[in-house]
Length: 161
Ligand SMILES: [Zn+2]
Image (cartoon, rainbow, N blue to C red):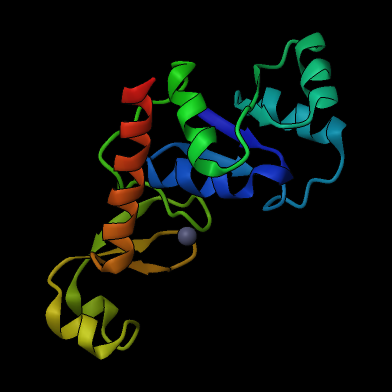
């Protein structure tokens, strides 16, 4: 399951990556043109996620897999995708994809991240991940806890129906 999101769904792209989904965003690719956007979706076999009804209709007409995303914030949007059966709420963060650039993450040795993370983090953590594309380093910190809480909130929302 691979996605292409339109420029209005930038935040959603980040969260799909946190959940481990291969997600490209129109603004990352500097795609301003709908024709090109549809071509990329088709070529890379990605599901186009959009909030633009016109674009959605066009995609359908041209046989590009697409979903008109409902929800005004990323929490509602993710819940929508789960209800649709498009994604699953896995244990987040999945640590497969870089939230920033969609690059693949790999485990890093402490020595590799020396000087690249705050010293306190370096001293107190054992596990690090690094993006093979942009070089961003990740570790279990407060952001980590917030991600878990966020996903938990969506789960509760879905349980309530
Ligand atoms: Zn990256």
